[in-house]
Image (cartoon, rainbow, N blue to C red):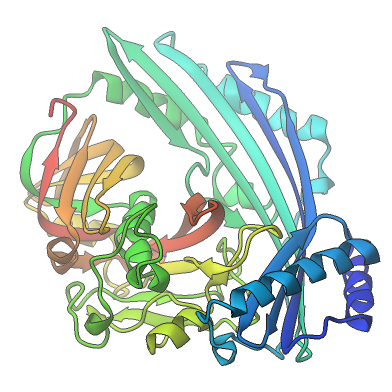
Length: 484
C-alpha cells in the first residue's frame, strides 16, 4: 500500500472523526518475504502481508481501543464504535484519568535508508545467492547440515490524532545468515555467520556489510574446529564478549529490567518483574564507570530507529545509564505519568491489532576510548576467554541472575589468543557482572545488531529490537563448559 493510500484512508476517517476528548488512528501495512536453502534444496518460500488499523479513543474517564482489517469507511466506523463502547465501560471502573493519556500533535516523517531495494533483484537471483552460499559450505563430509537464508520486511505506518498529529514512518529490514553443523564421534556443533543474529535496517546492500558471500569458508571451518576442540574449562576467568553476544547480554540484563511497565508490575504473571525499583533511578550503581547505555533511535541502520513511538511521542537519544549510574527507565508517556519518572519514546505495538506497551527500541552500549582496540583488550588479559555468538540463554523472573551459552570460545593466556574451546558458557548476577566491566572497545569495534523476536505482553507481541555494542571485558566471571 502506498503512503498516499494510507493518507486517503486517514483523511476519510478525520472527516467523520469520533465524538471523543481525544483519538488516534494508526494505520499499518506490513509485507515480508523469507527464502532459505538447506542442504542444496530450496525450502518453501514465505510471503506475507498484514494491514489494518488501530483506533484509540479517550472519552471522559474511559479509554478504549479497537482494531480492524476492514479499512473501508464502514469498517472503520464499526471499529470506532467498539472503541467508544469500551471506553464507556472502562469509565465505570474509575481506573483511568483522561489527562494522563499522552496527546500528540507531532508532524514528522521517517524513511529507512535503502540503497538497493529488495525488489531490485529477481527471486531467481536471490535463490542463486543462497544456492551458491550453501554449496560453499559443503567443504567436509563431517558437515551434516548446511543452510543459507535471506529475509525482508517492510512496514508502512501512519499515525494521526485529534490534535493534528501526522507521523508517517517506513521501516525496511534485510536479514541473512549461514549455518553449518558438524558431527564427529557423537559430538555435534553448529556455527553461524553471514549476518546471522546481526540484522539491520536497509536493503540488499546490507549483505556486503554482513559478508554474506564470503563467510561460508570461515563458518564451515569453525564448525569442524569446534567439534574437535576441547570443552570450555570451568571456574573464574576474565571474559571478553564480542558484539554478537553483547547483543543478548544487553537485551536481557539491561533492556528488559529497565522497562517501566515491568518495574510497575505489569508483567508479573507472564515474563516476570524486575529487580530494579523506582527509587533506584538517579543513584543506583548499575555498573562500573565504563558503562554508558543509551536509548538511541537515530542510527540509520539499526532495527528500531524511528522519529516517534506509536503514541506519537517524538523519539530522541537519552542516556539510560551514564558512568555506571542508573538514570532513566524505558517508559512511554503513559508509564511516565503513572510513575512520575522520566522515560523515553518507546510505546510500541507489534502490529495494527495490538496496543502500544513499553518496549525496547535501540538500546546501545556506547564505545570507549579510541585507543581501546580489540587487540588492546586482549593484551590486558592474563587468563581468560573470548566468547561470541549466542546459543542459549536463561534469566530469572526478576531479570537479575542469568546464564548464557555461546557458540565459540577462544582461550586467552598472557595477553594472546590461544585455541578454540567448545560449549562455552558463563553465569552471573547483574549488579556484580556489570560492575566488573573493565574494558570497552573503541568506536572502530562498535557493531550494530539486534533481535527480531523480542516477546512481551498478553496477548503476546513480538517486535524487532536494535542493539549495538563494542567488545567488552569483564573480570573474574564464572565460566563453564558443556560438561556441567
